[in-house]
Image 1 (cartoon, rainbow, N blue to C red):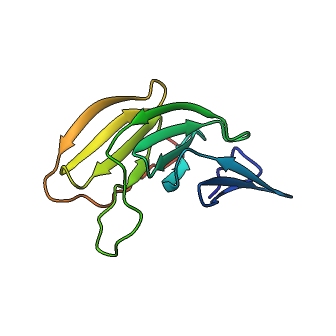
Image 2: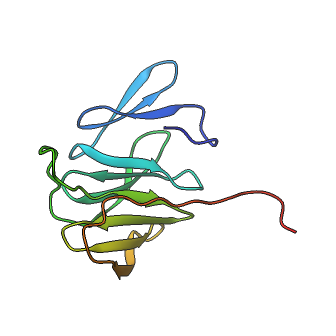
Length: 135
C-alpha cells in the first residue's frame, strides 16, 4: 500500500507492518494487523486483532493514538466475518459484524463520532473520493 505523499510502501509484516523502500523496516504493533491503509491526507491507520484502531506516523511507524473499537478479532476460521475498515478525509469507518454496526471515528481526536446501526453482519465497505477541478 502506498500514498502519494510518501516515497515508500507499507506492507503486512506478521505482528506489525513494514516500511518498504530501499530496505525493509519493521513497524511492530501490539497485535497482528487486520486492516490498514492511508486516509486522504496520508495518515496511516491500522485495525489490529486485539480490537484497537491505531493512527501511526507513517515515516517512523510510531503509534500516535489508539482507540479500542471492538472485542478481539479472531484471525482463524474460514467462515468468520471480521471487521473491516474504510478511510476517508480525516475519518475511519469500521464495521462491527457481530453488532450490525458501522462506527465513524474522527482520526484527529481518535473518538467515535457516530454509530450506524445497519443490521445484519456488515463485512466490508469502501469510501470513494474524487479529486479534480470544481466547476
